[in-house]
Image (cartoon, rainbow, N blue to C red; front, top):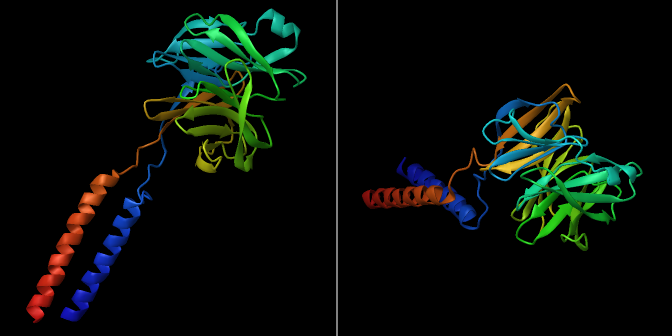
Length: 292
């Protein structure tokens, strides 16, 4: 009986050591898992994109921009219902995509009817007034754009058959392309956070993809799984905010996803494992001593 007990204790010790080794190498078994923590009904005009500067939320419609209170997304504090200026409309520009905001400027991707001369329009965030445009850019579609503060660049992509990410400077010069590990379809929104780029895809599963911008490795990160159309994506205080359109002009939903809701601190787990291993070793020692 004692031999069996000792064997089981040694087995437990080996399992504990394996788990500790895995964590020590950085391959945490308790990685953060995203979780939907709230769903809000939002203005049906908010269907294309969203962004926040920590003071306001900004939403885009087909040809409009809106600013709302951070504490109340239903309270519109500013609006530009003709966000595409006349000189761009004359050239065929007719649709704004998923937006971003950086240093009091809103960056809005705009497509033209012929899908020949996409650009990024820049607006003053405080007033939503048009400032200037970046481009035309060498893309047929431009469903989203996101500013990377660390590199002072703008990331974007095509809409379908997406196998690379375009990276531009603020003058519209192509800096580089990030080759993806897999091809993505029907991309609707994007947000860069550190080295990771989060893309939303209306691909039948309302999928959020997570991309390592250093390697181009693509991970199917989370599926919202509605029968509706996913839209833009934003970030605030550890949460992703993802728009889903039920029907144009009839209703939209805002899914709030906690990126760290199920995470367990690796250091805490390591301390517990070390203590458990020490107790197991002591138990084995006492069993062997009593046997002798």
